[in-house]
Length: 196
Image (cartoon, rainbow, N blue to C red; front, side, top):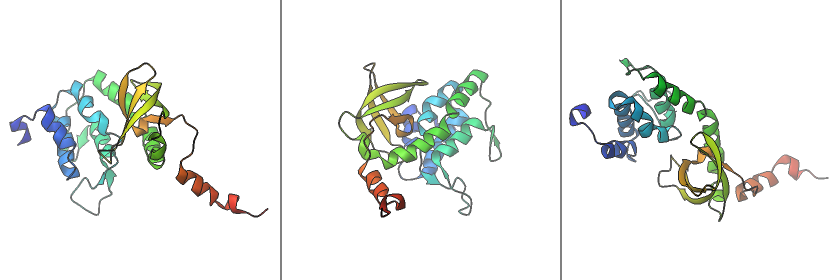
C-alpha cells in the first residue's frame, strides 16, 4: 500500500523517526531499500546505522533481538531480506555503502563508551574529533542532541568553522578529564583498595 501512496521524503523520515514502534521504523527502512532511487538510499538510512534501539525483526519473540542499526545494515549489504530479493544496487553506490559500513563495528563500540561518558561531552568547550566526510576533524561540542535516545548526536563546530551533526559513535573525546562515574568505579577496584 505504501508504494501506491508514494511517500514523500518528509513522510519517510516521520516513519524512520517514529518513537512508538520499531516496526513502523522498519517499514520505513524497507520502503527506502525497495523503492527509493539507489543513490538516495544512504541519505535516508545512513544516520540510522548506529541506532541502538533493540527489537525483534520478526514476530517470533523467541528469535534473537537485534538493534535497529544492525538491521538497517543488513538491508544495505545483503541481497535478500526474508524471501524478498532486494533491488540490486549499482556498483558505485554499493562500493560507497560498503566503505561506510566498514567502520561500523568501531563506531558501535564507541557509542557504548561515549554513552557512559556523556557528561563529559556536555562540558563547556569540550574538544572532540569527529569522523566527517571520511576524515577525522577536530572541533568543539556545541550541544548534545538527546532527543532521540537511541541515536545520540553531537552538534560540533569544526575548527574549519563548519557546524556538523554526528553520532556519538563517530566522535572521540579529546579532553582527558574523566567522568565522575569512571573515577568512582576505579576507586572501588580491587587494585586501588588493596592495603599497602
